[in-house]
Every structure is written in C-alpha cells, then in structure tokens.
Image (tube, rainbow, N blue to C red; front, side, top):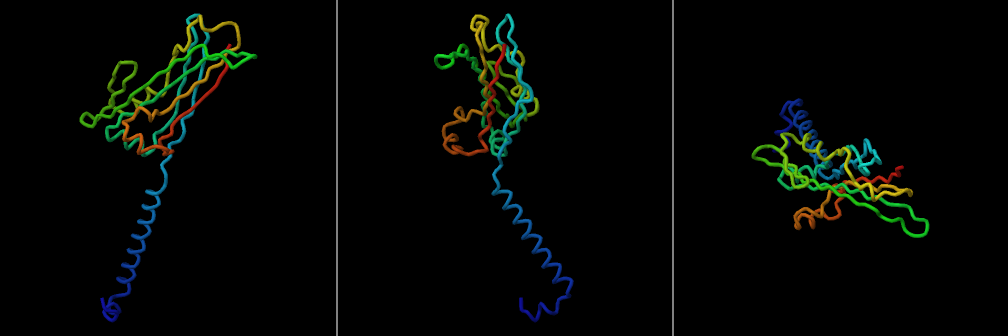
Length: 198
C-alpha cells in the first residue's frame, strides 16, 4: 500500500496492526524454540528397593517412578509396542577371582495402546491384561512384590550382592524404528542399583 495512503489511517489502527505482527512473530519464535528443544525423559528413580533372604529363596521388591519422553509417548499413541525389561543378577564375592554369578532373573513387559478401544494391553509372562488407562497399565510395570530371583540352594554362607537394572528395551522394537531412533537420548530410559544382602 502507498505510504501516503497509510498516513491517512488512524494512528491507533496502525499501532494495533504493528502490535499484532509483533505478537505473532513472538509466538512463532516460542513455537520454534519448543519444537527444537529436546524432550528428554527424566531418568527413572527407585522409590523403594528391598531384598529379602528367606527360606523360599531370595525375593526382590521394588517401586519405580518414571515418565515417558514426548517421542516415546507419541510412538506409543501411534500403536508402537513398548518393551520394558527388569533384570536381577545375584553374585557371590570371591577374593581370588571375579565374583561368581549364582543366579539371574529377567522380566519383560510389552505395552500396546489400542486406539479403537482407547485401552492398553500389557503382556507379561505369556499373560495379557487390558487396562482402561495408561496410568493403570504402567502401574503394572513400575513395581514388583516378592519377585523370586534366586532359589534357596543358590545362596550359601558367603557374601552376596544383587545387581538390578530396569530399562526401555529398544532392541525389541521393529527393525526400521531401531535404525531411526539409534542414539537418541529421549529413548534412553534406564536405572541400575547394586545392593548387598545378608
């Protein structure tokens, strides 16, 4: 528009259009910054971790707190199954050589969102259960009570300790997706703990 024509506009109208352009540019800058910012998931933390050495064997109980990153949550919402693995290894001290692993136990969960029913299927140990909400589905993954990780005969009178790990296992995802997310930190979700017991 010609400059002479602009000068005939009321001053408040010119100011309002300028303010709107500035606000729009500011909002675009914020949106671009949020899109560019990495969406790292906070690493899981163990809210509780307890080892019981009983006549039945060695029992492990734990509770985890964790949230999914935006990328992982988006993949789950699009129907990509997620796999979580908990692993516990029991070692016996040896002063003359490497510590000896006397027992190993592993648990794997598969979580799948079903868009048609807006529900979540959790598969664990060959059994599948459906949950109406994500919170309920992940509650099944976040805790274990009295999980037997060693038989009574595997623990002797020596000194022992447990190495525990929990992780989102990307090696079980579809192969093309593994290539696409390789090295992305927002798909790195794991926690480890080493603890002695009597």
